[in-house]
Length: 301
Image (cartoon, rainbow, N blue to C red; front, top):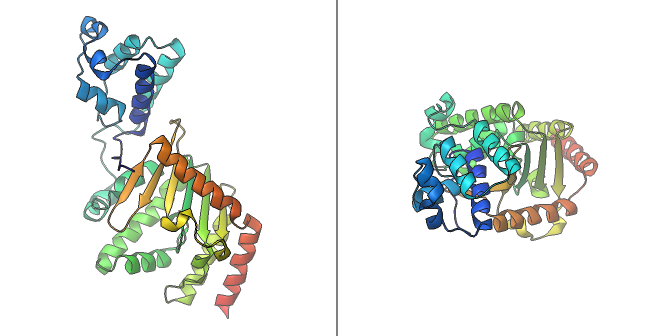
């Protein structure tokens, strides 16, 4: 599974995907397009390399006259042209837009993990499906629990750096709440119920937060019983994202040293199938809340 770089803009990535589909439907190579008579007549230039970057969503800017010329080359229908040009006009992440101050201050921490791309896309997602093994999702974490999780998973960080990442996580929760999110599905292994991080009071507050989040109509939280045993998710946590302006989903996978973004159809389908399979085997929302309440009472004793 090859690593894919985060696109400069999700909408430009979608534009590129649709243009590639139109080109292939006309049985044209990138070389055919680069030397096409329509581009010469319109005074528009693009080489094979530039067209490849455009189709992969890796160009910072795309001129409207170039897109219009390509649409003519591909003999796109009126509806196809209007949809693609609308996407071009809807781009809300132009190159050069200043990063949030919190991200700039912590670029030395976010950069190596390639996590800024995740943050940019997460806040624009309409639907998120998050599988976690041992911890509760970052969008559901209380501050003390987040500190414990980051500190124990990243022993190389100084306390001030851990606190900085906690601040990013808390801000991330606010940004997602105020963003486009309409549906959040969280699937967590039962094992997470019993990991306290060494502080029972923090563990209890965290479960109370999860219980509270489960009551939000946008959220559906399910616990995957230990009895399920080994399963595809055992390979590691992941997040599936769907967007209002894009026809496809993307998947993010976090490793110890980096976070990876994939948008290939086969990759996304594999993770979607894994999530769906586990989702159907998990406790339903009511059973999950019952299990949470039981564990909270145990931690109160």
